[in-house]
Image (cartoon, rainbow, N blue to C red):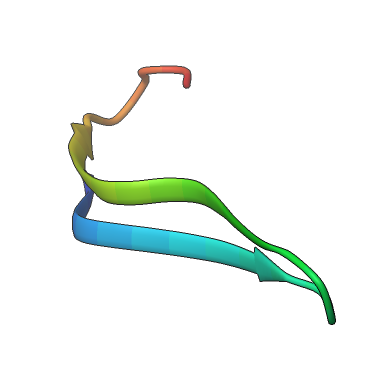
Length: 34
């Protein structure tokens, strides 16, 4: 099983900050596809 809790991902340039993921929590069991 793979789990994440409160995952965040930001992309930043000199001018803009873009939120791709914000507070993502999930679990993926063996054999499942995402």
